Length: 216
Ligand code: ADP
Ligand code: NI
Image 1 (cartoon, protein in one colour):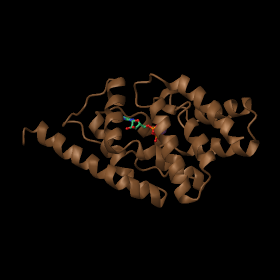
Image 2: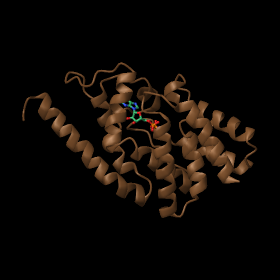
Image 3: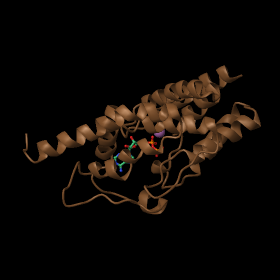
Image 4: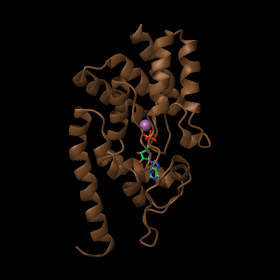
């Protein structure tokens, strides 16, 4: 049952997300589904359910739907119903998608299931490390953001509305989200995998400022 759900869903997502230039392309989803599966195996969660939820986690992201964070679960539900997936699988996947997204420095985003924790960790791992740096600047470029502006300090957003409406240079996003992720990993495997990627972010920023300030 899962093999077919997964392969049909992968085909649909691949054709829908190929060519995106904001960091939310098919290859992001493909990395997240592989990492989610791997974390699920290490954590004793359900690898198939993790992979299916990972495939659908960005199907209709609020960042591209006027800030509407119900669009993703709705699109996933319609899709899985069209494949006649069992109701409990649909409900679990939709809950994961509703809970997975980062909503600001001051907003708790806890997952209600172990499978969900594996998917969220996998998604967040793809926002840090070398890939995370590349995705942040791809996103910034696609949305016309400045790379860095020393006169525009980062803000720690207290609620989702403030986080959603943020503009600001891409470097600020490192302080507003990326550097916070390591301590918000939900599984021991996720925490372990985040360490090296977090160090890479710090190293990147250190060198970025030294080059910016001609301090090399
Ligand atoms: P989430 O599900 O937590 O919203 P995603 O995995 O969908 O996260 O995608 C977030 C990606 O988009 C990350 O790589 C992140 O760096 C990038 N991104 C989101 N907002 C910004 C921003 N304002 N500036 C730069 N990159 C951003
Ligand atoms: Ni994602």
